[in-house]
Length: 237
Image 1 (tube, rainbow, N blue to C red):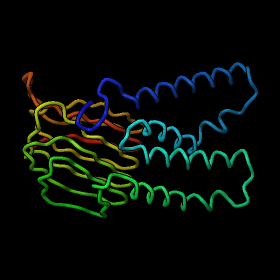
Image 2: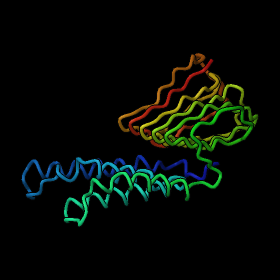
Image 3: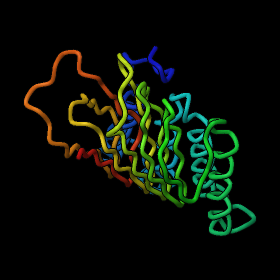
Image 4: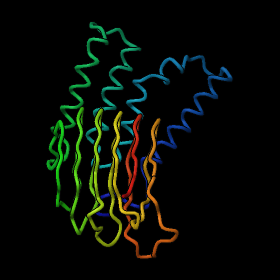
């Protein structure tokens, strides 16, 4: 188990995503060959199903379990509205549900996380614990035993400067969650960066000027998590 409490040998997000794609392929085959008369597209290719899929991807990660559960619950509720007639209009419930989701995520997320509309400054913490919801942050870490951490951007963005930091020996993990948001990470070119991020309509780009070779004992930073309708840019000075 690594320092973030994740099992490095198994990428659960990729496993869940793979199983969901296999299931989707099977449903498309059933529909294309008229093996079972169901209008799959009406229920599968919807924003409700997208929320459920995102929730399933996030759920296995202990740090994002609350967020995953809330997304699954919201998606399932609105998807059920397609099958059953509710006494109130679904459109009147959408924004209250979104606000409820953000509130629950803040209440039951990591106790160390502090929501902020905009945060900036120099930080000497060994761990990142940054949450930007409808806001942003601009922080410079100077820790000489940097261990990774967690960055969450929901309709927000952040700039994390690690140019003055040093990694602790071994593997150090940063868990990213970017939904309609993104991050810019300033990382020294002599660090080895391994990207294990699941990207859906988004991506991670490393634009650093890298040396031709890195020593075997070069410090390693592993980026994990989910980028949905967003992006992560890695740069160096």
